Every structure is written in structure tokens, then in C-alpha cells.
Image 1 (cartoon, rainbow, N blue to C red):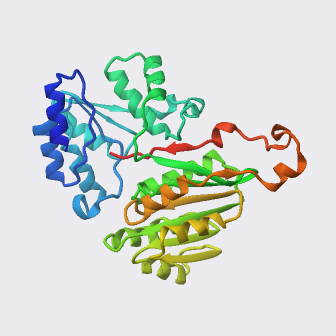
Image 2: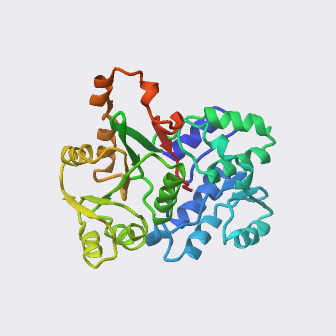
Image 3: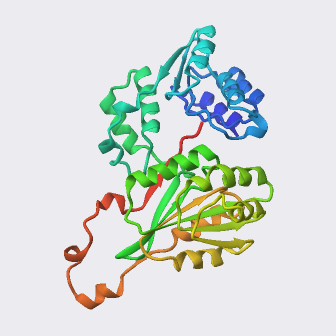
Length: 332
């Protein structure tokens, strides 16, 4: 599909082309850069433990795989990373310059203007590219706010009782340990009004290694009240729970349950709950997220009983943090 897209770019004589390198295999990444795209600017958004079976087994191996996308006589944009010196060494050999995105220049007040949640690192990387292209910073800042959101971006949906809603964070697509934990930290930073937290872990029979990773490196480090497991091959989660590695008040095993059954459980959760879906988008995650998206905020009985104006008794909460949002993860 990317070959077809490149052909369209050439046929239309485009002035600029922005493309994500979807390749996982290190050799495919090299071919993508050297023979297909020949990018002037490469953005390496992160070096994290993902696709270790193909690019690993270590982070050093992943960094080496990504380095093959560094252009000749161009630029490589990176966040602050332990691999900065390594990338600088490779870039120097190719006559390219390394640009480190500065997150400190991105103000939280600016990030709150987006109709979805965004990490400071994402904005900093984009602004660094804009600087290289000599795009005025104010123009870049305004343009980013108007940019269309990736259809696969993580959504946050509010549903349930109006005065005590539930917030569902669709993080199923962030299927690596680092991104999943980073998103959770961001959720905590945004301080949604909640009394309880529920994690929904979607497991796949063909991704058992990922399930084991999450059982060992994610779930033990998330403070939660309830854990719901769904999908298939959930045994690694159950084993970690039985061994006391996962601390949670309630574990609900919905292995092989239908989407309707899982949605019903979510609807029965207490109000003012934060619900975070993790693990896998395929194998049920996408279907669950779509079903939750159809759930609505409904008036509470007290709305009818008091007859008071809503703004008189509604809690004083930043409305921007209550409306439906989307959360982007840092992905290469």
C-alpha cells in the first residue's frame, strides 16, 4: 500500500510527502528509506520494547534497526533518549544532523487546546520538524490544532449517569509496555473526576508473549480497583494474580465472552470510574471500543427531581476535560 501511495505522490508532483514507516522487519525499514521514500527528514519517535521477536531481542537491536532510516545529508529528529549519541554517530557518517526535540518549549496550556489528549513529546517532535522546514512557529502551532486526527488514535468516551459518569480510555492500540504505562501516567496527570479505576485487558491467543509481558511489566505497576480480562489465552494474567504479582480488589474473568457481555459489565461499574482498555486492538478490542462509543450520557434521577438549573449544582470541573477526547500515543 505504501508503494501505491508513493506512486500517487510522484504522479501528482507533490511538494512534500509525510509517511509513517510501517515496516517492522529491519531489512524492510532499510529498503523503505533507501529505495522507496528517500526521506530528507526522519523522525524516530521512541526506542521501546515492541516487536522484540522481529527487531529484538534488545533495545540496542531496535535502535540499530531504526538507524537504517536515517537519511543521507538530511536530518533525524529524536526526543531525549539514551540513544542520542548512537544516532549522532550514525548520522555523522551519513552527513546528517541530529535535532533533539525540546519538550520544555511546549506549554501545557497549549496541549489543552487540542480536541484530544496529546503528549508533550508529540508536539515537540512536530515543532522540531517545522523548525527545520523554516515554518513560522505560530503558524505551526495553529496548524497542529487544525490537523485531522489519526483514525486509530486513542479515544476517550464519557458515558453513564450525567452527574457521575464513567470515562473509557481506548488504549488497545498501544500494544507495548512503555506506551501503555505512559498513557496511564498521562491519564493520572489529567486528573479526571473518579473514585474507582478499572483496567480491561484484552488478550490474544497468537500474542501470548505480549500477555506475559503485560502480566509482568504493566499490570503490577498500575494502581487499580478492578481488573477485567477478556479475549483468549488469559492464563498468564490469572497466574500472575494468583501468585500475588497483581494487586487488585476484584478480578473479573470474561475470557471468550461476547462484546455485549463485556459492555454490560462496564455499564454496571460505579459512577465516577476511569476505565482503561489495554493489550490488543484486534481480537475484540476494536469491537468493544466501538460498542462503548455508542453508549451515551444519561440524566440522573436528581436532574428531574430538583428542577434546579444544571449549572447551579453541576460540579466545578474543566469542561474541556469532560468532553469526548482522543489520545495519541507515541509511535514510530
